[in-house]
Image (cartoon, rainbow over all chains, first blue to last red; front, side, top):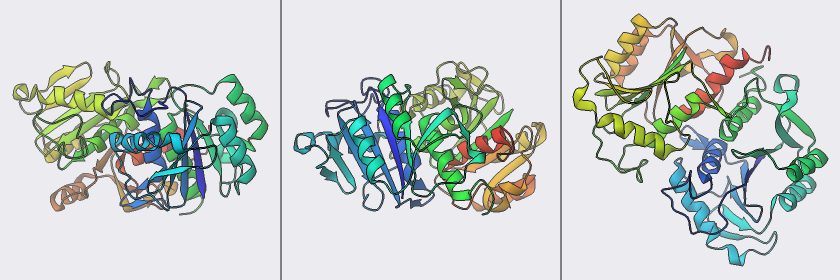
Length: 200
Length: 200
């Protein structure tokens, strides 16, 4: 199981946003939608052993579960519609008790601290922060069952960074250039798929 | 200079398509828009030494020139609007004589054969086909000034594949899993950026 946590700092926490203005009025939800795409899609296939958590405005988490997903398409707009559908069920979400709004899509009332705290206790593998000051990926053996934590178009806040300093087992740099979060997910998958090009 | 050719088999050749239906009525233009994103964007930066050619319905080519781009944003919808703007100028495009519809965005009246023929004669580097039966990327030194040729959600047609057999200097496989075109571009950049993780 590979998990990805994406923090959407300006992402909507109510469903009243336009699917035609994802990069504007919807607080750069387009970034998070591309991350969902990168996490799950292969050519004519979907990675079932992947879970993606979108943290929306530090208030809700929408989780996509690869093995259960049924209505995910690659484009930003349809993924944003799934997020909107989850937000329509937000009143039913109490803490980590979630509401499934669509097959494989669940909303819980958890902000960054709560989610990352839960994952650091419960996940089978290490929490990995992708960071430009981290160890080069070429020096790191691909971990089993990693939980990657990434930010959207904005940096982690001071509080988020402090929490990550506490709970992250590793800090890894994927390459010489700083990447958009969705591209970082693609490269992380490639790293894990190929084991640093050593065999495939 | 890194160049990417993307073949949009069902892509629109007129501007009468809805920006709200990119994955449907606009013939999977969402795929091509994500490819433009992957080719150009870095975190808080844009790769200037990149050129992307979108082949639309084997009739027009819309070229994005990194060093001249001014209005490119990461989301699918705004990139599709640039493509639509280029198609509005299509009547002025005669052969390889293009019309610039927005800074760094030019439309020419060239289909796949014509474009790839031009590139194979004029490009400084090799034409590289990304193909699941190609050489593993781990065995190939990153080429200088490559022209990568990729298809959208559909395979190359028989004619396209035959032309590529003729003109491609290399056939390379990026990894063990077949990827969407936009993810393949991200991995190709990573390969060239890191030189197979040998140094960064």
